[in-house]
Structures are given as structure tokens and as C-alpha cells.
Image 1 (cartoon, rainbow, N blue to C red):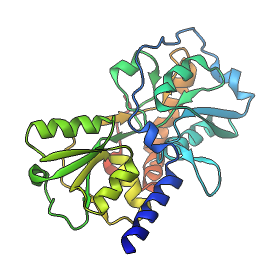
Image 2 (cartoon, helix red, strand yellow):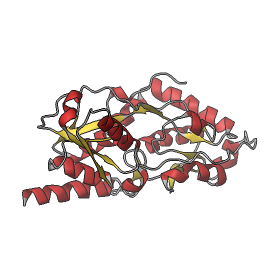
Image 3 (cartoon, rainbow, N blue to C red):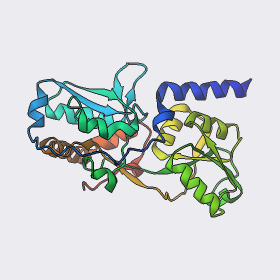
Image 4 (spheres, rainbow, N blue to C red):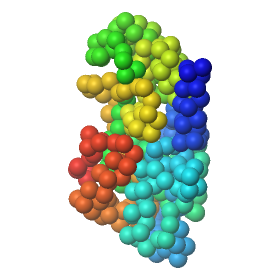
Length: 286
């Protein structure tokens, strides 16, 4: 009975905090789109009269999601955008939710939206489609294990069965480790709640997932799990906010505010709100 109760708690927590979670976490943004390069340097003046700054998002906690208690947009990226929007003269930030894989296509085709923010990692391929703000924070993969586990070091995984989400880059990493003999076997899960439940009930020895999502869920859920440390990530990444290539003034104004938020530790405070420490900070601006 205790196990069933614990499983219900885990699933309920994940559902209320991660609406749409399992569908977007493993998605990939296509690189076959055409960037919007039409010159439009007066974007800020054109949208200020609307008073609402609309952000494209995949509704993924803890990056950008609807708070079930207030029914208001929240999350790391949304909190950062709220500070930027206030600086630019907007009254509020609103979210337009689309699948993660559609973010850039919608950004370049939908004039009612201004940026895309959903824990988007900056890559050279994505830079072909959009511009990115200065780096906001870091993320990578993390290894999740029970708090009491025989897995205490990454070397202990060689005799372990590990899990990862279907379609994610972390499943690719797990399969790579299996081929290299670094793990015993790999189990594929459809979503993160299923993966965490399997770790909790020791159906598998460990799981590989996004470090920020993992840290946030452990912070919020009081789960009997932990992130394996020390561990050096193989897939580190830097998160930024995507802006259309033609919106030069908007990008410059956002970057100016981001610089200020780094200096006055606003970004550090926002990360801490979601259970993230200084290891996720990015100090340089470009």
C-alpha cells in the first residue's frame, strides 16, 4: 500500500508541474525552416502599445509553464522574461503554447509572438534560423539514483541497468554507454514520470535525464532520489532565448537587461527559486 501511495504522489506531482512534459522533452527542432530576415528594427515600438509581451513556449516545467495554483505563466525563462518585459515597458508576459519542435517555425511565421523561450539550448544549427540572446544558464544530463544505492560513482554503472526517455539525446548517450561497456543494459521509457517511478521502486538502477528537470523535480517532490555526484557531463549546453533575426533592436535591448540581471544576481535568484545552484550560472555574456 505504501508503494502504491508513493507512486500516486510521484505521478500527481509530475502531472501538475509538467503539463505536456512527456511529449516535448524528447522533441527536436527541425532545421529545414527558412529564417525570417526581413529588416524590422522598430519591433519594440510596434509592439509596446499592446502592453502584453507574448512568448512562445512548449509549457515545460521548470522552464516555462502555467502555475496550477495561480493559473499564471511562470518558470525560469518566464521569470527572466518578466524582468525584461518590465524594462521594455510591458505590463505582463503571456504564453502561447506550441510543441517544442514547432517553436522556431512559429516564431518566424507568427507576428503576434516575439520570442521563444523553453529551455532552448543554443547550437550552431539553430543559429541559422534565429538569433539568441546572451547565454542565460547552463544545463546538461544528470544521472538519477535512489538515495540509498550501490551506485556511488559513475564507474559503478558498468553493472547497472539504466533508463532514459524515448527519443531523447540522453537515450542516445545511454545506448552509447552500453556499446562501450559502461552500463550493463538500457531500458526505454515513454516519459519522465514512468522513468522516475522505475528508479524509485528499484526496477532499474539509474536514469539519465535533463539535469535541470531532474534537479527541479527532486527539489519540488521530496522524492527519495538523488543526482549522482561527482559526475562530469558529456552533453553540456547553454540556454538562451530565441529572437527573430530581423528584430535587432529587440535583441539588443534584451541583451542589455540580461547583462544587468547577471550583475545584480537576479538570474541567480530566479534559478534558486527553482532549486538550482550556482553551478548553473553563466557569467560571460557572449
